[in-house]
Image 1 (cartoon, rainbow, N blue to C red):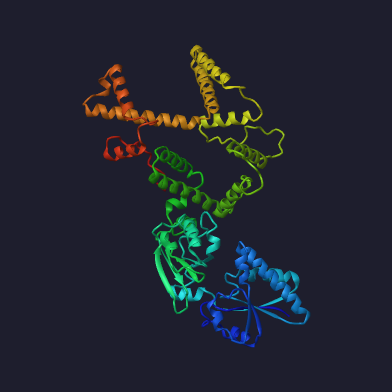
Image 2 (cartoon, rainbow, N blue to C red):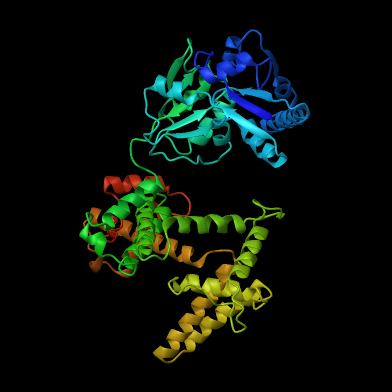
Amino acid sequence: MGITIVGLGPGDGQLLTLQAFELLLQANFVYIRTNKHPAVKKLPATLSLKSFDHYYESQESFDQVYSLIVEDLLRIAREAMVNDANIIYAVPGHPMVGESTVTLLLHKAKNLGIEVEIIPGLSFIEPVLTALGIDALDGLQIFDAIEIAQFNHPPLNGDAPVLLAQVYNKHLANELKLTLMGMYPDEHMVSLVHEAGMENQLVEKVPLHAMDHSSRLAHLSSLFIPSLKNASSLTALAETVAFLRGPDGCPWDQEQTRHSLRAGFLEESSEVLEAIDNDDSDALREELGDVLYHLVMQAQIASEEGEFQLHDVIADIEKKLKRRHPHVWGDWQVDNTDEVIRNWEMLKKEEKKSGDENSSLLDNIPATLSALAQAQEVQERVKEVGFDWPNIAGVIAKVHEEILELQEASTNQTRQQEVGDLIFAIVNWCRWLDVNAETSLSKANRRFSQRFRQLEQISRDRGLLLSELDLNDLDKLWQESKERIDFDSEYDIKEQRKERADGRVPRPISGQGGRAA
């Protein structure tokens, strides 16, 4: 003997199964999770009920409530077993659909050797599907709204419909919509289904941003979210790429290797940086998509070679991020960003330990980094063992020293060497100023290019030929162009985009792009 768990079905008792009703008809006493369920009124009048509603009023969380209910049931079951008796526990819907007490009870009862029998019941799902007129096998995702609301980004596939149970009040609905709006547009139409399968059933269609305004939200409310209009999941992209590589796909994609894609990946990455530098969100969205295509393509090729799969790539970075953020997913304490960076580098170093006594601090610096970025990374690493100037005065003096040595260089080979030393010293100065040398030079290039294009535009407007102007006239035009375009302060990037659209400032010509351009 032990515990019999019976499902009361959804709604007002009309959907109670015959098996459940006959069991309850023969019983004298039943423990019920909550009296706040319409089916309770349709139970046999001879049945004595004891609910656990008082725990909902005294505890701060559902987890605490569920734990206390299970503890009570196990204690009562052990006492009943002494007399070779059985207890009955009734829950709304189906015992195995959204019933946390049942899941916990099954686990603990097994460890205690208490037998548990489950009498199935209709869940909330079936009447909701009927109310909406949809088929659950069309990829329907089913979750508890309470759990989804706790995420920062919903763990859902936007390419398939979603059903969320227990949207029981406006506060939860508000928290839920904020999470969902991380994936779905604010105006995405959703359906709130209230009291499914009952006389007062209502399907309320509203835009996502207004779902928490409903006056009908209660413990019998569910939320249905249709799939997004356009495929947008990583799974969909992976399928598209795999199809392109397949026998019925595209000859170009089929011929690609990881090496043939290298140049395109580098170009697309550069276009991402350009979009960032231009503060162009539309271009950034497009270029990130191109880079994502390359990432998925590389993973697909690796999968075909039996090396690794896309999910391995995602799993690795997911684990790495959590491993390197012990102050977020652990018990480490940090006071500022500097400590975060130090911890990150320390953990990174431990992960890459090879046990090779001949290993160097300068190992694993990517050869594909730009020379400026390599210089800054080298200097950051040797700093870890104290190989650095004691103060910035020494850094500045070194720059001046390198300038003098360059001026004194007498051969082209020597000048090339001294130029390299000078640039290396300037990068070190940038590091001491907490300035990224690569970014600074990139902005300087862009700033010069925009100013010179403006100078060209001024000369065209005035019918002047630059090749016929002397240096004094060119300098005047240059100063005028600087006044019109000042990237560092008054000149707004949005105005730049407007001028480009108007044709006043020519847009820089980009490359032809890769396969995904």
